[in-house]
Image 1 (tube, helix red, strand yellow):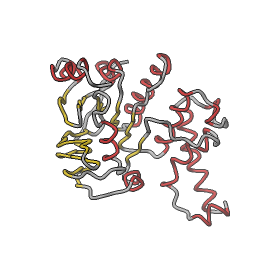
Image 2: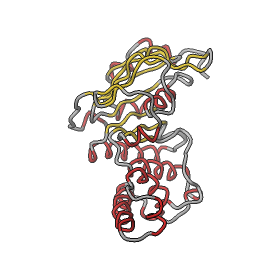
Image 3: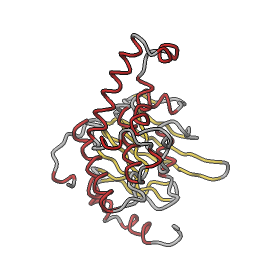
Length: 266
């Protein structure tokens, strides 16, 4: 189901990127990029290979620190931060290359998404007694709700290394959802999937947005998916923003058409 068929509320600005630049030595990954993400929307970041999309997500969740410019979250300009600090602030992330614990079960992988929510110390957790036990039960209930939501009850005890690629991607989404994020960053959530897997993932992304009210920013190469599920799209090319607007506006922009049909983007 596309966005045009769904009534939803888009709120105030949740995150704002102001004139962000990022360099590695003499190489510019991002140059003077500005855009915002509104509360409650699905915001796509697209562009040819090497456009700087993943670098932008890495700046948003603290893996990289911009060399220039600023990022504001909930109206506050952020200083330098680590990914765990971004996570504590309500920003969760999935990765282009699956980053799961392959020998652990689906349930245990998703439980790791609750670690920053756990208040009892390491000793309490080792003793697995009293308050720590009660806390774990509460966290497990949250994880079980995520498992039910993603329809992966049948694989909850299966080591994720044994799962097909599409299900591994779903488990990674589950781990991010277990953190109960306000802003969910998805880096190519449908890369390598077949048509049926993509349709499932699209449905889950829409449901996360609508049922949980989670704001989503995603990188995706499938233009059909982007145009169908996104509220707004920002387009990068060679680390610079070349377009920003609704899907219909962006896909008709001559600069975007040239970027995708031009040469030199292997």
